[in-house]
Amino acid sequence: MKLAVVVQRYGADINGGAELHARYIAERLSRHVDVHVLTSCARDYITWRNELAPGDDVVNGVPVRRFPVRRERDPDDFGRRSHQVFEKRHSIRDELDWLDSEGPTSPALLAHLHRAAATYDFIVFFSYRYHHAYHGVRAAPSRAVLVPTAERDPALGLATAARTFRNVRALMYNSHEERALIQGVSDNRHVPGVIVGVGSDVREDATAARFRARSGIKGPFALYVGRIDENKGCTELFDYFSRYAGQVSQRLQLLLVGKPVMAVPSHERIRHLGFLSDEEKYDALAAADALLMPSYYESLSMVTLEAWAMRIPVLANGRCDVLRGQVIRANAGLYYESYDEFAEALHLLETNRGLRRALGANGRAYFERHYTWDVVENKYLAMLERLARADEDGCRARREPEPGWLRRRRRVLPPAREVVDTLPAGPAAATWEAGADSVPDGGAPRADER
Image 1 (cartoon, helix red, strand yellow):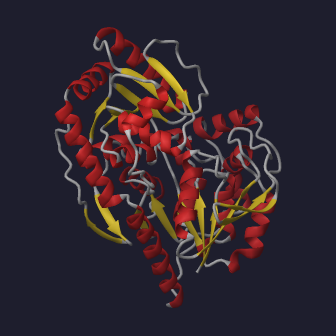
Image 2 (cartoon, rainbow, N blue to C red; image 1 turned 90 degrees about the vertical axis):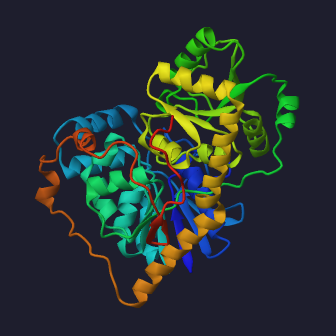
Image 3 (cartoon, one colour; image 1 turned 180 degrees about the vertical axis):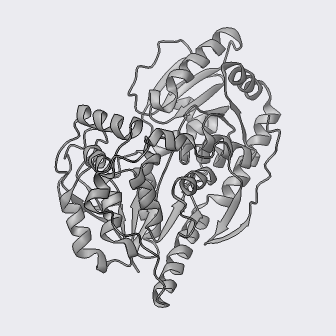
């Protein structure tokens, strides 16, 4: 079997959530089938500037072909078009213009998909909201498998997004909450789908002592791993932790790992460690008392799964449905929706070693049931085999006709933000799939998780 993996950026040193997810899946599936990655020449997700050479490359043993982006993103144009489709009545043409403005727009990549689609058995697209996904799925609908990486943000309410969700061969969902959102916005229950997420190569040799020897850090600490960004909830995190440090705890520190795109406050107990290697990151997790996840929007938190694999409890933002659902299903952490709840939960994790150990053990068990690479790979392979059997039997998914010239230009679509506001909220019901067959969740969620 020959697969193409299509993603907006790709590289060993490109660590965005969806891009890292795509690389992990490409590398793991390459052990079983022939995988080729198709991507842009961009490194930066804000500008889409062409920084990498076009043409063929190899990344960690996987063949990669890069295509140039036609133009960099114009922030002012993108902002205007975002306001139009998210906040006002608009047309399909407006949404297509928004996609073109968001990018990365690569006519060469789309031309390759039109020309070479038949040379691949299936084409796995990451992430639904970008130009290459919408137009790439249209180029090869009979071979398109989508990893949507969808969050509760206004782009989910676009009619073009719903159309994509209905017109692929299969969807590989990250979480129960993501599936509920996508099914709610698109009514795509006829499309095969499985909740799979992504695995992680956990370092079993990680040690807290090595981290403390390298960093010189003593005493208890909570850890944040990820982009240090207001959009990831870091402004609120800094506010809450500063208040906690002044009012509740005299010892606990907050350590930050990741790229800053906002200022890190000057505080004696907040420390930015910068970028860490995988070995250093897992050593830091091994030494942490808890992982803090303040993000409002996630389709799946890989670092949460890594923390649980390391038996570390998680304190998550309960206003993020995905994080709250993960914590409840795993019974491996606490969540908060206000400063008072944050302070109470963090104080429990800081002072109650037995609770930390129990939640950490639950997290490890949950990881092993659902997120080891064997489990993840088998779900992908089972879905691909199912689709291949359907092809052999002559079964074809139904396809919607393309909207006509007038329909594309009628401003009859509601603001996308209003559409999203009507979608299901809160943790979703838990069923886990093996291949495409639903089986009971192996976890032990509690109603009173606090």
